[in-house]
Length: 254
Image (cartoon, rainbow, N blue to C red; front, side, top):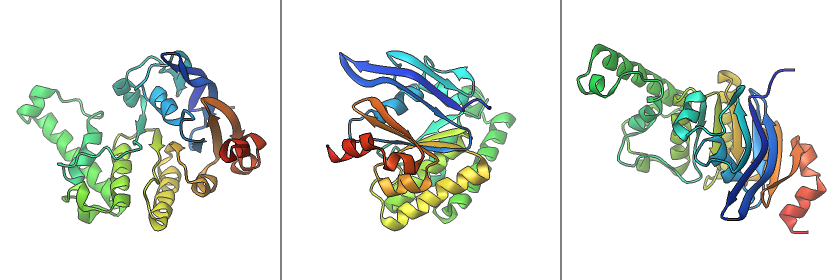
């Protein structure tokens, strides 16, 4: 059997005596869409922050593509091939759409500060290649005609897609999406769901996502992991999770 792309073992995260994650273990296979479910405060975003290096776990291990990344800072985790979006939009409001996407190319660049300042041939080449990649992603998203607009000039659902596109610019193997459907209309949710599935199918990108829209989760996920009060209470296929008594109790308060 092939090794999972992401392995989380006995992940523990405590804040001044409060246990946010209580020995959580889970895996994610390459090319899959895995979702985290759970009520507010279950530990979903905390798990994201531990995987991406924004938090250093109190205990346990995070392994990505066969490498232990538990103690790596966020920028080094990103270099391993992990990108993420945030629960609240994290776009640069003063930059155009195309420039927001170009932020996602910095990990691929090798030119230093001086090379960039003096526009050496290497820096010019990287800038040209970055622009070509950004326009390719915008075209893929159907946003090519919005390249020079500010994010705030676009509908909320489109802004979410821009943030998604910036993650794709990092050429990541795994993209973590934190509530990608939040605040979207029904039509926007459908478009985002189709986009996630298309990127998985055509680019081979794997996804770990947090989402409160249960029908969306059930529709697009290969596997679902359910957290409650920092503990993993269930995992399995959508149909298995949907009928799990522990999951029903967590959501209905039984």
